[in-house]
Image 1 (cartoon, rainbow, N blue to C red):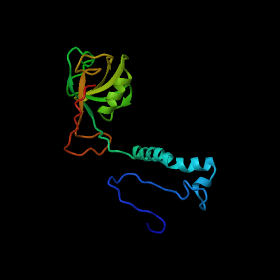
Image 2 (image 1 turned 90 degrees about the vertical axis):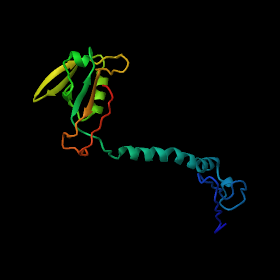
Image 3 (image 1 turned 30 degrees about the vertical axis):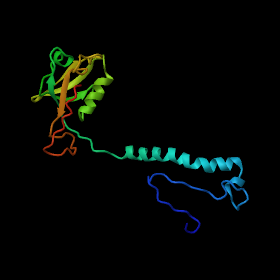
Length: 178
């Protein structure tokens, strides 16, 4: 005990305890037991309230901090036979530029836009060689096993678009079918 405070070292160094003056004895000066019921509830509930609020605040701040996102051209890696992508004329090596007029920055954008439009005609702006063209695909609700809604797999080019900071020489390949 030092200056009225008891310190301890515990086997499991998690949590803590607070023993307030007059928890049980209402005769002590400024004792908790002598306070009104609303004050006691407020004092005893403050710790639990902080245990709820602090993680919410910390996680909110953590999710607001910008994270590195790989941004680059989305290239078709493979197209399954008899799939919506094959019927639309997509081929390996095509570069997907837009989905329904929205630019693609990465395969995450492609997956999101395709899944938003399941069962609906979806317009893709495609670059093959030096020409661009528009194709229409209808993403499937229930694709066969191992295939995605359009049955194409894509990857990022190592050459980034939009001046982003994609590490040179590294290629991100999620290999997740769209």
